[in-house]
Length: 176
Image (cartoon, rainbow, N blue to C red):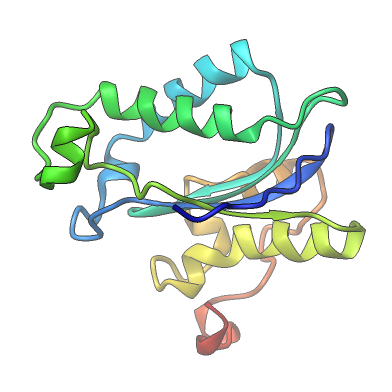
């Protein structure tokens, strides 16, 4: 088994991408958005973290988090979010023999992508990436049209204008 190295920086800020295992369940995350939100709420109540940015797409999500100053354990948080969401769903997914043997569900990919945010410019690039993602995937023409995003909070706070990033014709197709 590979020996993954993770940057464990107490109080650090990270960008994450988390994917469903089977991409043919195309709308699971948005169809069951309230179950996902509840799983996140439960984990944050027990293991606090600040959500800097978040977007939920039909089959994956992107987010930027900051952990408390004395805490670097994002892995436990993701394990609990993923398992809490999975347990709330009926068992309808196809399971491989390996997953069956391990008592696992077939909802999420086992791993996720994480990137330690290095500086303010890196932070802004990743927050922008989170918010523009629904447009880049062709789900909406304007960032403001996607309901499952912290973009709307950023607009309320005056960080972004409501028409930030224009419409789909303004986004370069190869940037996704």
